[in-house]
Length: 159
Image: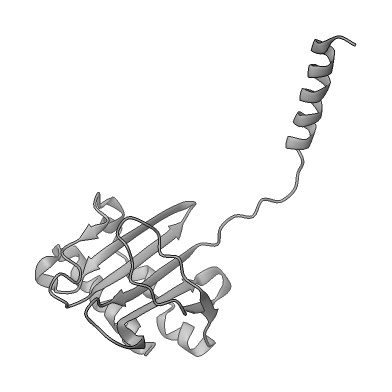
């Protein structure tokens, strides 16, 4: 057999395999939110939650790792009760559209004076984004003020 014929058969086989109609696992849309404090001791220094509206589920992270502004937060999440989900299920609606246009992942000076910060990650429509947001409103643009109130309120409900 000629090498070109063998190559054509191999490419045809690869094409057939690549065109299978198996379902592709699409990442679930979610928001991850929480707060963090660097100069702090105890379990409540870092609290992260994942809200998955499509499943009607709220999860809590067990790792409680301090977030990094250069990488996605990698947690170990466990489901929480439906009653807790019901208390925070509307949080995604309070995210201001202007936040999605932010060029910087760090907004303000989160935890610069040991006052803590917020972590927000959104996975929506195939696009994943995250931000570290300062706690003092004086360090934030005005469009975020109502949202950080809603964010803090949601975290307090889950304590």
